[in-house]
Length: 178
Picture 1 (cartoon, one colour):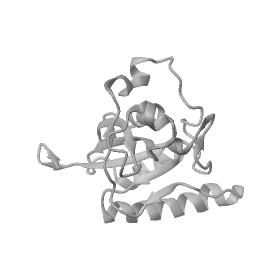
Picture 2: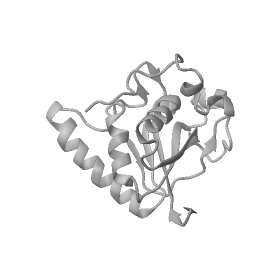
Picture 3: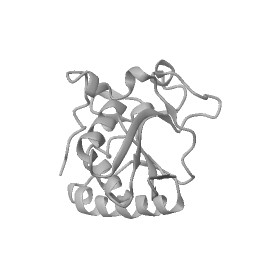
């Protein structure tokens, strides 16, 4: 994929409530390589195609709430985005972020290529050793070994939710941790 002759890539990150994930990527990478960010659902059961927000909230579809970012790798590397993902939530919480509980709020990264998978593994190991091993904690982020599956965009109401509703709910873990 390209824009104005430059290659662009996608990255898909799940770190709890997708509003906060999308918002923090937009806030920190607008004008720095981020082309767009959308919220939606990924990683669910094959039998649950194009689920609604309400269906995902039941936990029965197996989907994670996620943000899919489109970026220009000549301006920001995928590895930098992975490290930022880890900086902006608690990857040691299993199937939860803050008060949000359930598999739909799990910490997960969905690679779109073998190169992305390699970067995820490298950055995960570096972040684990530098930030979590000294605290006696373990990253439990789900790293998808296969290419990212279908990403189902959430309805328009949920896109840029915190921009449209600046006082809306935001998970307390969506902040810069280091």
